[in-house]
Amino acid sequence: MNTDKTKDKKRKLIRRYTEVGIITAVDSLLTYAGERQAEMVAQIRQFVECESPSDDAAAVNRFVELVSDTVMPFAKVKTFPGGKFGRHLVCEVELPGPKKSGQVMALGHADTVWPVGTLHTMPFRQADGRLWGPGVLDMKAGIVFFIFAVRALRELEIPVGSKVVLQLNSDEEVGSESSRALTEKNAAHSKAVLVLEPGTGLEGRLKTARKGVGVFTIRVRGKASHAGVDFQTGASAVVELARQIDRIAGFIDLERGVTVNPGVIAGGTRSNVVAAEARAEIDIRIRRLQDATALEKKFRELKPYDSRCTVEVSGGLNRPPMERSVEMARLFRTARILAREVGVELEESETGGGSDGNFTAALGVPTLDGLGGVGEGAHAAHESILIDRMADRTALIAKLIAAL
Ligand SMILES: [Zn+2]
Image (cartoon, rainbow, N blue to C red):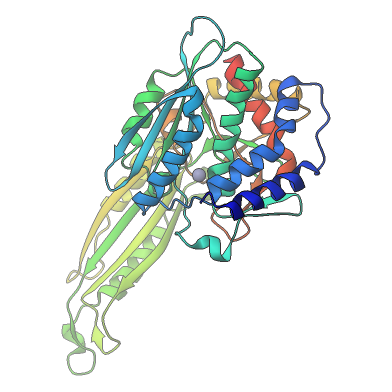
């Protein structure tokens, strides 16, 4: 990694970024972050170039180690086993101020959806006022913002009344199965959770509501036969599944925010065989927890149209919805007031996408999500963040930490 060539490249890059406009402001935190834009870009680049797909534990662990090394000078770092996934990181930041009361938790994830090698076709780059690359928005920039936010609080000696911990999970993009308990344990004794996921849209709206997410698998077993010789003795699992899919389309209620998507189907062996087996994977989203039970019941009660077929349903809700509580609305209002100090008129949004903030909000812990990068193209080839929104985001995170 640390060859002279890359060092040289980095130096050149830093020089180039320094020439980019510096934000003018009187706010000390905003000034701090603005003056360190080149350093932040270099840090984001280093994080993006350390690829970390969820299903590659070794790669995720390399990234976790990189983050550990970065925060080590000012934080106590612990990592926790993630089963077949990489390790989860929890660190407690040393911050100025006398005795701490209560805890504020910053929450994010170390994994991305991009396989190792994506950098060959989607290299990190700076162009058109943005930083581009796999995972830059979701959510390596957010981690860097947090790091610079706490560095700012330390260097400007701004007192912080709470204990501050950062948790990065290794399996968020694949459902957080191995990290959920750790997230809930740390959130349970926190007074607020700040989620470093990207904001919504190019305005960077915060997220105060997220839908709950679930997955159902429907397995149909029929009876195989020769499609020519023995057609009538067969019972097609494919036809049965198609009818079931048509039935579950009726579970959709857009007004209530209930959606059902059969994203994957498979079945059959050859066109001249009446299919013995078929399967579908169905993504469900709900806005309110109270809708979960009814929807789960509807899935469990699916009966075959053709009595010679069997229908087996498994799965269920894996992330409860993040519902906008009174406390969450209050936390957002605090953020909006603080954002005005750095010249930003903050808005809030609701999204159908889940995050680990769903778990913390469901525990009743006020959760503010979407504090990370402002950009677009998460999970897509045009994934990017706006450079001129890095400083105000970093300052906002610092201000929230100091205010809570
Ligand atoms: Zn994410």
